[in-house]
Amino acid sequence: MLEDPLVQLLILIASIVGLAAASHFAIRSIEKLIEMTGLSDASAGFIILAVLTSTPEIVVALFSIIQGNPAISIGDILGSNVFNIGMVLGILGVIGYLKTCWNDLVVELTDMLFITALIPLLLVINEYHIVDIPSPFIGIILLATFLINTYLVARKRTPPVDLSDGKAMINGKRIVVIATLLASFAIVVLSARLTVYSASNISVALGVPPILIGAKIVAIGTSLPELTLDLTAVKRGRVQLAVGDIIGSNLTNLTLVLGLVLLTSPFQVDMTIFIEILPFLLMTTVIFWRFIIRGGISKTGGAVLILTYILFQVLVITI
Image 1 (cartoon, rainbow, N blue to C red):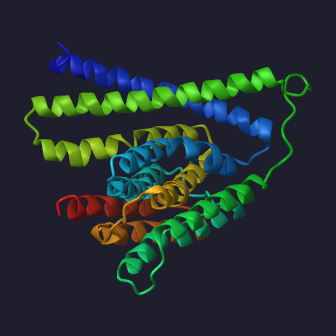
Image 2 (image 1 turned 30 degrees about the horizontal axis):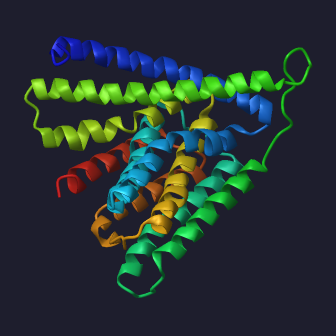
Image 3 (image 1 turned 135 degrees about the vertical axis):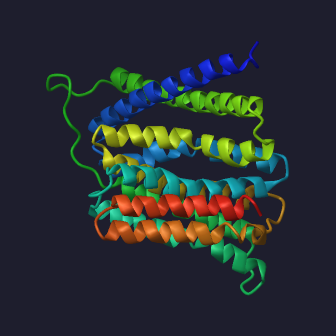
């Protein structure tokens, strides 16, 4: 009965509704945490939301190391980063939410992202023994970079807002907010998985080739939490929260997740197999960086990012 296309369509609709509702509660919880901690929107996106939305990449990294195939994790990291900038920021830009997302912290974070995006390129160069650096040593440097970046961003605070009729927020209230955030995010991830599952089954029923399902529907579906959370954030006027999330998520992938893979993997990772992806990672990052230092991403800029991702799908996925 579960394979019935009508049932799958109902699951798909319910999953999309679940995504939207859970994203709303997750962003509301983060707004309350911002008030409690005094973090700016960009800082909260960078530290809190980015780590949450990078959880799938962290899980993939752990399983890929256990299974002795770290290349899976590295491919996931690079592909996810291209999607985050190309599609998520591209869509937000086309809708018109990112015309003015500039501030000093966002520019600093984008500069960090631009520099960090060069790391995979250096790893490829390292494969040709031009500069022979052991992978675990590079992993330690990446983990240290993640910790330093997080510390520097966390220092940029404003005085916390005094809530509850002038009384300090009690610990019980703080725990409730954090629990709501984690529960909402769990529902976001579950809804995204069900969306991918039902969409894949519907595609099979319609005769769509499996390779197309894997390359297009599933690949995009695994990034649905990022897209729905950031779309909800900008609709609520939290543009810098969304931008901070994308920058933070990409930095987390390239420092924390990649660092863990390189440090703990007993296998030497051949980075040359990802040489087709790297130009698109660098291209989307440079385009994003260029728009940000000019003040924001216009609708045209958003369209450019989306077209870059489509080109990535056409050229890389079909290789």
